[in-house]
Length: 217
Ligand SMILES: [Zn+2]
Image (cartoon, rainbow, N blue to C red; front, side, top):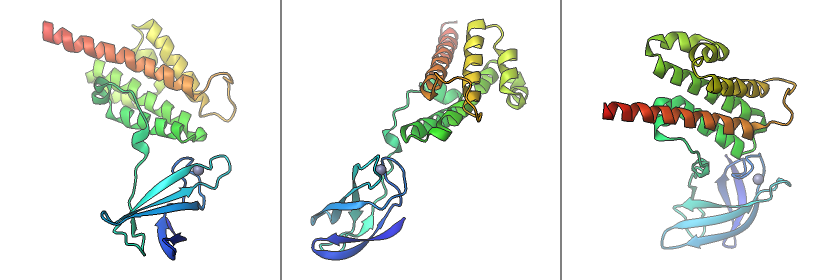
C-alpha cells in the first residue's frame, strides 16, 4: 500500500492504493483513467489501468466516506472468490487441509504464478492421499502421516491396482514440479490438476457408497 497523488474532481488529492495490479499481481504504478463521485452514498469510484505491458487491464477501486473534494478511504476487495474450485462436500469434510491447499493452488494458477502452482497442487495431493488412507485405516493415522507419499501409496492402496497406478503417476508428475530439470516436457500443471481431480472423484464415490451403505444396512 502506498500514497498516490491523483486528480479528483478538478483538485489534486492523495489516496491510498495497493502496490500490485489485481489482475496480474505485479508491482506497478497504475495510470489514473477516470473518477466518479456518488454524492448520496459518499462513495468515489476511481478507474485505473495497469502499466505492465503484458497486462494493461483496467480496474475500479471503491473509496468510502468520500466528499466532492476528498476521495476518502480505500475499500478492500478480495478477488480470490472469483476462482471456481469444484470440490465436493464429502471431500471438503474428509480433508479440509486438502481443500484449502487445492484452492490456494488454483488461485496461484489463476494468477499465473508458474513457479509455485505445481508445488501447491503436489502438496494438496499429499494431504488427500494421506487423509483418505487415514479414513480407511483410522488405527494407523500416525503411521500414515509420518510416512513418505511413495510408501503410503504402496502400503495403503495396494488393493486398488488401477488407483495405485494413477497415484504413482500423479506422484511422479508432482515431483517433477519440484525438480530443477523437468522429466516430462509434454505434461503440465493442468494435467496434474486434472489427475488429482479424478482421484477426488474416486474418493467421493467411495464416501457416497459408505454413507448409503450405512443408511441401508
Ligand atoms: Zn496488471
